[in-house]
Length: 312
Ligand code: BDR
Ligand code: CA
Image (tube, rainbow, N blue to C red; front, side, top):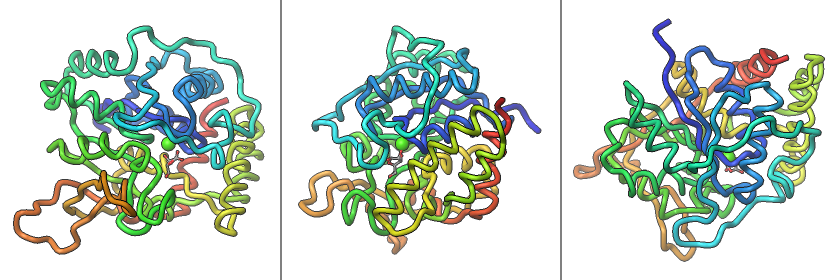
């Protein structure tokens, strides 16, 4: 294997963000340079604390965490307590943090880490794109230091937060538009693929059967996460959205993509936060995004369980 890909996770943990962090830290293909947090599933204080608690669970206090922006660029923050609970990560007995967030904050941390990296870094955002949008506005000179943005967000088809918008893009569409229009290579792991990356009650049992503390905690977290999906969609099979974006970087052969031109609707009365995908391949609409569409459910679930099993 060639040397690991340097990545930074930008997230709002979040049950599926927690699994994304775990997968990223488990994979030898990736070198996690740090984790930045953003307001999304819960407010910034909670998402930062949740990231630190997951690192405590995995006994990885060495991974730098930097707290970013709480409110979206132009709007008040909308959180998702009905999906992730009040804390953003309800349902399990998580350890207290054993490390602290860095004092400089996410934008300064991102800028310094990119500037210092000898090779371009892949960003993996799995929350609203506020931090990344702001980074691109504040530090356009660092674009060459970004190899790719492989994000969880958006959809080619229907949304999940509104009929037309996926949650992460809905929360901060202006930031999302900055990212999608940045000219950087983008992979969009939206609902088209994440609704194929399902885990449910059999996986809760498998995590529990690991007989480890991380196994128990993730069994409880997954069980909590399935509860919302059971109530809302009538099935406990639950998309582990954010871990797909990590899998797409670590093991790209698992993910089928198609190039499309994608832009973000920021004003639509009914379509705010929609990722508008051009299916026609018209002249003048050069594809700017690799849209991820396919993943093998069993292989994905195996990968996630294997990741949790690698921590004791
Ligand atoms: C996205 O929204 C959040 O609730 C999840 O963590 C994921 O990033 C799915 O729409
Ligand atoms: Ca998320």
